[in-house]
Amino acid sequence: LLPPAAPWTGAPFLDANITLPWSDVLAISCTWAAGATNASEAALLITSRLYSLGPELFEYGCPVFGREMYTSSVLAVFDCSAFVERINGGEGNGRFVNCTDCACIISTFANVLGARLWQSRMGVYVPAFLTRDIRTIGSTRWSSPCALGLGFMFHEVAWNGNAAEVDAVYDGSLLVNANLGRTGFIVPLLAAGLGFGPAFGGQYRSMLAQQQDQLICRAATEERRCRALM
Amino acid sequence: MSGPDVTPPGKPSELHLRAVRERIIARPSVRAAAAPGVFFRSFHHNEAQTPGWKLKRARTLSQTGLPNVLRVTHLSLAAADAPACLVKVEVYETPSPEAARELMLDLLTGFQSLPERVELEEAIGEASVVFPRDTARLVARGNLVVVLANAGTQLASVGEIARSLDRFLMDAPRLVPRTRRLRLQQPRLSRR
Image 1 (cartoon, rainbow over the protein chains, first blue to last red):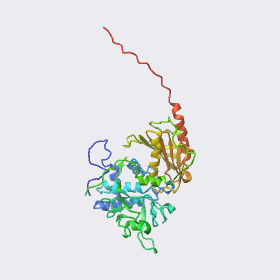
Image 2: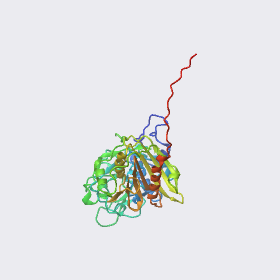
Image 3: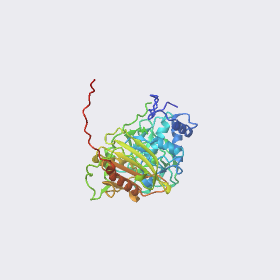
Image 4: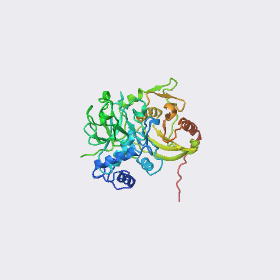
């Protein structure tokens, strides 16, 4: 494992510096990533653990139209203290999460163990891209997002490298169907360390977006971020 | 391998804002500008402002790094008679009513599954974005934007909290005591 990466720092060693690794976060990350021998494995285990917290602790926020509840994209912050509170048995900011929240949780908890993950988006906002059937965190149903049939204006995941097409994604907010055929059984797959891939390339992008919308579901590398802690 | 850097706060992308604008239907009655002269600073919540709701969590961000957001207060409120009913409330203080309207649009980008149509009305506040079934709402009043969203297993209509808070905000300036102008006296020099 490597030293912590952003949003974490190792200095200055002052009480006021909230970017020094939090003991609570280290405790959770180490528990979730137990057995990992490198940062990629740690990120994979953290992604898997986050998804498994649904439906007991978390659920994709369909009732609130997928609002970010642990993140503020405008303020560029991740409410890590609220998330830790929820994991430790408190209310935190409640049970609803969206893809941005999950991207922040995975990248922040993996980066403290030395991963180098961004929070980055795919899609072009207008038009939205239609998805194949997915199973969002906390749900038991395979459907379009919130069964509305509207697709995603954007989708956000934890993403390694430069958050480009060739890099791997870690998506704790939903399962994709790895069976790319039009018929047959659903093969549930949690994308953790899976390449985003080119359109029609058979990787994450092909599993998430419907065939006709795979060009719209492009990697928005220019929007990659790392939100600060609060 | 170089890692990520912390990203400074900023405006959502223009493409995203355009996508949001396309989904807003403004009722004709919504006034173009907010009422002048209503300005709030250092919002502080107490339970009297939201009858029937208990404060579970409060957090204030006084330095946001954004010129159009002076301060943000995050609250979690639980219904007194139904603890599974939890609502997250965020109060954004901006420099002007115009900045508040603009921020309200920016904050709509935080909804990944925005409905095809959201209504802008003025039933509460000077402008209010209402979501189907009233599970979430954004309200602009003066230089403030209040965002309310359900966060618990049991869903509540957030309109009632929004209405109580708005009533408090409109009453609040009257609670401020009038100040008297004091005349400063010349300093006296003691002579020995």
